[in-house]
Image 1 (tube, helix red, strand yellow):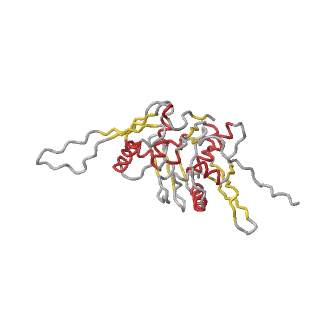
Image 2: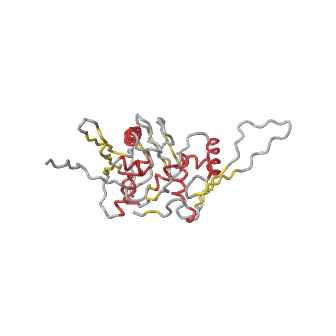
Length: 297
């Protein structure tokens, strides 16, 4: 009797634990807020933080591609909590990834996985944010290696067995040494791109329970919103009215618009719209929809 074929790799999946994310990836705009290919570079700059993201031939890695990064970070955090050794190499099934992120298991979803891995490997990132007590000059990619491993059936049809990836040095150090890993609300993957980023900024900023009071335009840049401020104001107004962000209340505080000019005078061209700020407040634990405590390690 023939022995069954042995697996040539050991799986890190299924994920045993919550979805986790590294705090810097929550706080700052490293991914494009798009479902389709985003072919333009992304930049973010403040007096203390600079980020430059360059697209690959398939575009910049998107907020939906980020699901894979979050899944890998969660696998790593779970292994660390269990006292297991961790390396930069991870092997998992696409089935478990899709189950955790709520994606369907259609052939189209499997095809999208290949494109997402290619963008994660091809997107180039440069930042002055240090990870694990070390900084880096030059560019890095989220995945330094990404492979889909197949087996063939008796009919010669390919069947996806596992996904093998190697996490970049920067993010590996951040998770391993800094311990700034926070859990996500279980409804995160049901949110749209802007809502996901608002949740992440809130989660990374309100960990001590203090509200975040931030200028609307500053929040727009931190979210990574590429359209004009007026569009962002409309989006925030709608989000604040629907109460869709898990665990957090969003309030848009708008200054009164400038009064109309006296009769007979024309309104000056280029008059700026009324300023606004956004106040984000953590709901009491009894009313929260997701996890609330940071996961150390």
